[in-house]
Image 1: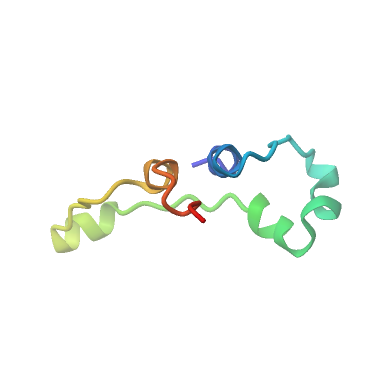
Image 2: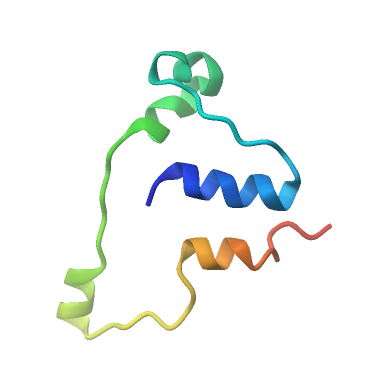
Length: 73
């Protein structure tokens, strides 16, 4: 899932603007976090589902974030 999608949901709930940052400027903008945000690390639960018969029952990350309960004060 694109980090931009996560940032947009967080920004919307915190009423903060979300802007695109070029890869050249990412290090300066994000500091030590830039390397993690730039990493292309696809992941899948397919093996866990196959080996253990696991089926997720909770919402995915984007749906869970969008419910807004992480942003209540």
